Length: 358
Length: 158
Image (cartoon, rainbow over all chains, first blue to last red; front, side):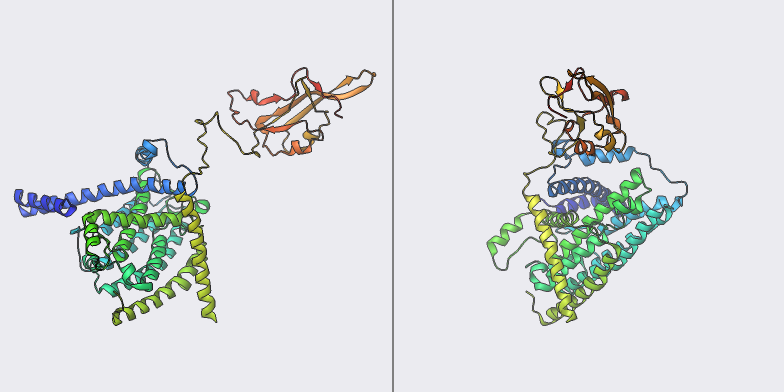
């Protein structure tokens, strides 16, 4: 059957028969880089139009409906607009840091793509500490935001960056503990092994109530980590105009915008990998016939379906809940999410030791 | 007892969040009732809300008669000098002088559609119309005279 891993395999075979190993490796890296950049561009276009449509439907509106069929080309038109706009650097800004910050945001997003398993046997880098790698690299994100806020030499930007710093540092804890809850069950940090361990059922269902609690906490924490409403204090349009990227325009702004959406995709992909089985089809215990039917759906469709379901969930949050105040935000993390996830981790450890999961 | 309150609080918070998400989820899945007005396209069938206020007008009946007595209540009520009442004196058949309006000048460009003049009017002579396509190339066109030329006051309005 046609699959992503076969395409990758045949490209690899062709390259290694045509060129010598070094050039083949370099060419493969180039192809991977181009593929990632292409994926970023497509994700940016798709997620922006999806966000606007979801927002419109939730608010009983129509959303963009002028450019292209049903307005589906709206985000392409917006991209062209952003490309031709002037990218200004304010006079009082720290020019080097100001211009560097959006690229750091993009580089972090690119690095995070490495260990994600997009389909069966289709992964850039299956390193043995994949999940740890993701949670550690994602914390570099805050540096680009702080950099942008600090170098803009603007009070709004600085305020947004500081809030974002406090927010990401604190919410990383509960996101990490929620991830640990699943790692306790799988006994491995490797993405491929985590996916493989869910061959007979996803952890969300196999792990009883602790897994569901961990899933809820994970979704809340990653919503905060990606700076999206109801935790969008870093941008807070109504208070800080646009927070850390107030001073950015043109393509530099677009990079921040894109990295926000790519980050949403990445955290949802991690959530799908941990809780919903990654590319693993939906299997129910011993129903052989049902499982075979599910196996016929390509693994990449399973992965993207689950990821987009989680992205939809995060968009649903955004257009339902009002923004939290900074003290409420930190209260929520330190008084509620962190203690609950700690107790939950303890509970899950007990479950895992006693072998009470399916 | 602290723990009980804590759990209660978490439970209440999660419940209220789910109530909110049910509401928006309902809107998302029932994509029929749309509040968007696709304005230039539906110009012919556009239906505005009852309380929409576009500009001040003075209704006249078929005999070109209005209800304005020229009391200047609207002019006094207007917070930003939008209305200017120019009065004159009519001679009634009994030979008495009677105050009436010559012109009721209305500056649309100054008006904030606050509706205070309409509520101030004792004889319901003016009301808010629902027109809103007011853009013109010349600013002078925004200064309007509300009473029709040659109009006079309705019989029995004091």
